[in-house]
Amino acid sequence: MTGNSKTLFGVSLVGSGSATPAQRITNDQLAARVDTNDEWVKTRTGIKERRIIGEGDSLSKLCVEAAKAAMEMAGWGIDTVDMIVVATSTPDDLFGIAPKIQSQLGARNAVAFDLTAACSGFLFALVTGAQYLQNGTFRRAIVIGADQLSSWMDWDDRSSCVLFGDGAGAVAIELTSNDQNALIGFKMKSDGSRGECLSVPQKKEFVNLVGSFKNQIGRFSNIQMNGQEVYKFAVREVPLLLKDVLGKHGITAESLDWLLLHQANQRILNAVADRFSIPESKVLSNLKNYGNTSAGTIPIMLDEAVRDGRIQPGDLIASSGFGAGLSWGVALFRWHGKT
Ligand code: UT7
Image 1 (cartoon, rainbow, N blue to C red):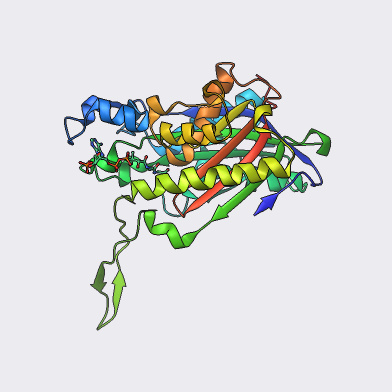
Image 2: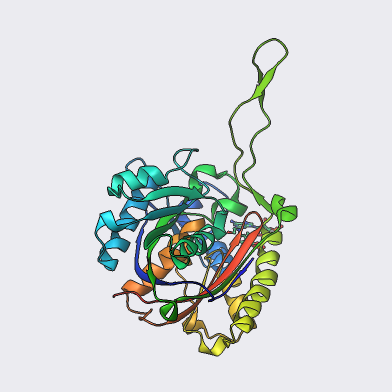
């Protein structure tokens, strides 16, 4: 699915926020549980530590904190928010957490719903939220990306447990005129035929209901991942899609200010950047502190770079989310935040 700038209105990214759990677990600490070591995890992934939701935290709490920070940066009154989209695959409640976040924020005028697209979730949610503004339906939206994959991990599987962490990030977007449109282009893709590479499938457990009728118990497995296949998928598909979107909009890789990829593995970030000769200094990475927070990675990284002044108003950013589904997407946007 492709998008372009031929819309009724424009969308502007005016605020960002993020929140991560207090509990921090280093590679060395994990090595006390599984047969791994700091050197292996650092060199193969770039990760040194991750944050894990503990007893005092919850995913919705982190989402509320991130959304509040984004709204503060945007300078919005809470009653002016029209929509909240929460990208997550790990809600506190299977029916969705967006309404709970809406209520905790006090955003009584906002419609709120969840969207699931795993590690591509934030990017898909940003594009989804932007559509409502660009067609004039809503004026202001908060887009949140958040996950708590630590709850779905086999903590004795060293090939996956070292990769993931928990966290939430949010972006405040608002309607603007078409000539100010900051979402320059996007493309999103899905390929369910390769979905088994990365999944959290429902368990096939049935119990007797009445007579010979049975019903399935609502339980899920831990994360099942073929790491090498996911790696190959990412380094093949992301550059293809990025090239496509850049070409469609006549934008050269040299003119990008930042490459903001889903933070899965430093080697994936480097491989994608290398294909476009994008220097390391333009590749945003905070993997070492958080690992892969799934839908959280892109907005958490964006917020960090906005707040420390690396990303400046007007900067051109190429972002890509990729992961389970399989799903992947690219968005080109300018940061118009009031920093
Ligand atoms: O949002 C998307 C989520 N998924 C991903 O991003 C995953 C993408 N894939 C990857 O990042 C990489 O494939 C991994 C980091 C998961 C694995 O790296 P790799 O370079 O592909 O390693 P490998 O699977 O080929 O394993 C190499 C060796 C194996 O040992 P042998 O068979 O060579 O003796 C593994 O058993 O490394 C071993 N190994 C470990 N050793 C120490 C695997 N995990 C660990 C570990 N510590 N944590």
